[in-house]
Length: 293
Ligand code: FAD
Image 1 (cartoon, rainbow, N blue to C red):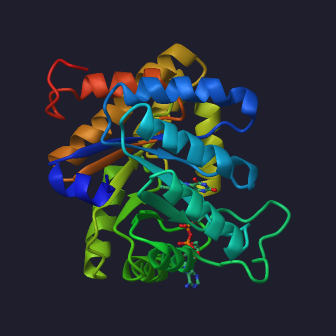
Image 2: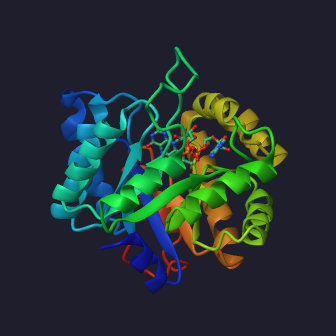
């Protein structure tokens, strides 16, 4: 099923993200996590795409397994920066052959040893969106950044580039993680003012590991509000307490987003069914799922 149809049909969607195994020996563990997360009946599951070509095979395999074995719609992420257009083309063919109708089209991060685009490769995600559109009837998602993408000096320009992705035929957007909902609300107004009218799903990261989050916010430029820093200061060195506080913080964020009319929540579940389950449980009535979670 196409994700745009799922979004149109539901008052609120909740989806989860998985990353594929980096090594073949991790495959069974990821499949197990996928089965457990699928058992919560999210509206769809997204599977990330590693920076190196090797994990692309696993992205499609896990996305295919989620659909065929678990009966949950999946979306395969696809990046274009470190592959030739021909290589990207082959992955799109594989996605299609496996019956996956949804692709999250991304540029990807530059490889560590170079930030200069490789000649002949796509430089930006809008070019990939154009290629996917030409290749078939896919539902296409793309990334957006409520606090601006870290490489873009100007948030307004970042929105102009985001509009290019929408104009190329992207059906919906998923945000980078954020920890202050007011940042998202301001972003939604600014996006609408630019004519960006596709659904925007709010990316929520339940933080359970203080050290890990400090590293990823440094890389992404995400702001940590004082209230959140207070939680990390107090509980960061106690894993069980940090997990409980992180789940509670994410739950509160989601309740506020839904209460304010946000129609899609995308959970960065990091292959942790226990975290997804706790959040689904906390939101069972809010999501209209009653006691069945
Ligand atoms: P783009 O939209 O191409 O933007 C990248 C930068 O270029 C921005 O600064 C933008 O302002 C600028 N730009 C865009 N168009 C133009 C233009 N025409 N001219 C000049 N500048 C322009 N990474 C992975 O490797 N695998 C994943 O699975 C993955 N999943 C993700 C999922 C989500 C929801 C998000 C938010 C990010 C994900 N990422 C993933 C990270 C992503 O690849 C990086 O953030 C990357 O740096 C930017 O990708 P993009 O698709 O947003 O790029």
